[in-house]
Amino acid sequence: MIGLIGKKVGMTQVFDDRGVVTPVTVIQIEPNLVVRERSPEADGYAAKVLAAGRVKEKGLAKPFRGQFGEFSPRARMVEFRDFHHQCEIGDELTVDLFAETAFVDVTGISKGKGYQGVVKRHNFSGGRATHGSKFKREAGSTGMAAWPSKVHKGSKMPGRMGHERRTVQNLRVLKVDGEKQILLVKGSVPGPQNSTLIVSGAKKKDG
Amino acid sequence: MDIIKAIEAEQQEQVAKVEENFRIGDTVKVHFTIVEGTTERVQVYEGLVIAKNNSGINRTFTVRKISYGIGVERVFPLSSPRIQKIEVSRRGRVRRAKLYYIRGRVGKAAKVSELVRRKS
Image 1 (tube, chains in turn cyan, green):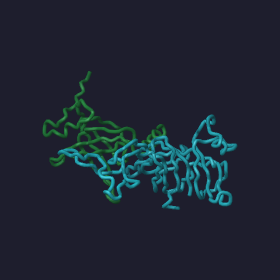
Image 2: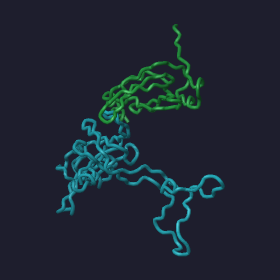
Image 3: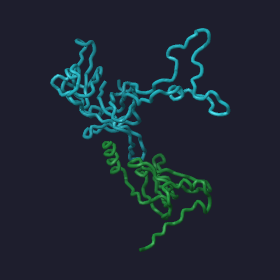
């Protein structure tokens, strides 16, 4: 697996030479610092720890700051298992890592929607709006009868929606621009603009 | 946001750019490339510009015409490389940016009067 930490910039569209329009998301990937290596001998698994994003040194927690050692600290730190790109601690990986990748998976925190009802949150149908309807956007029945005499755990009900870690798989890479440090992928990715994204090689395409 | 603007500006340069030489209410001829399998040909679509939408690379315009008694509206992306040329055949005098009211009218009521510029 290969992967990098990036930032969602926003969406736009691109034309190809035949005039076909493709919606794209722009992901900014500044150089990622290799902070640490995990080895099967010492940790039980192989992985690389990458970090990215500008941060002020002042006010950082010492246990977090300490992991960077002699390097300047970064805002986000992510561990990538079985990282098959050769690199040493202290190296900086740029977006060019994806130069030969056709598809990526993108992980982010989805936009928070607040407290939502069942129609929006779980795609319930709701009832008729008019003609004397007394059943509009309610959930309806949530259980059975005297047995089991309780509501099962995990029933679909109103509540907080969004702000969850979500991954979108198999997004086609349209452009890798090392100079501007950006990546263009087809389609949308989770989260608001300027949020942190984890971009990795597509798990179901090239393993 | 500046990165988005930079990407769009770069795109604008790459795609064959036609000038936005028409306004709302004008009657235009759009020379649009149609791709049929492997062959390409240019089709001319003539009608009234009733709206312009969006901005930057996403900019589109809507052209309405009456075809065999049926109203037809087509939305063209202004930056599309498939637009060869846009010719203005008639300037219109209108007082609003969106001419959606034309849809509900037939005959003479659906006409836009011609823009006459007086020489000073």
